[in-house]
Length: 218
Image (cartoon, rainbow, N blue to C red; front, side, top):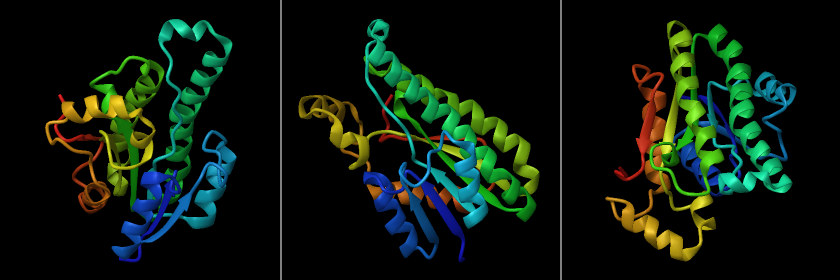
């Protein structure tokens, strides 16, 4: 196997666990934090790609700041929303654009981005974050179309609530409501996340898609 993986956002709750799981599977994995590389700075992202020349890129990096839309009239809320949009849209474009030249030249590549269940089931206060994740669906469709002939695929994981990461930042009272709304009746596990990532790596016919990995939330 000996495939090299870069995971942006690979030192957080879900990211660090995913790094460990994929290493056990035989991949060479490098997890990067926002302190290691600012995904909104193309030059930094390109530098990472040139240094490591990964076969597979996974982007878990993201920003979130909840606010009701009518409260974006407040300067601090507006600035936080701007950061969310920049990291979750410009940052994602930078990751994709910087990864593609080497992958296309190598005739192999897998790009896996992360979207959110909020794109199909909104929650009050998450309008900006959810909208930024909706952007990813169109991006992976076009990226998959443009690069399939080079054996380079691009997909997104439309993630629900997992046992780690942002889920642990949700207030306990709200977590109870959310868990009750999940048909599976539980949070997703890191093993399930890892299995889905491996599926996308091993299945090039799955391309340009956003897979719903959310326990059956409707």
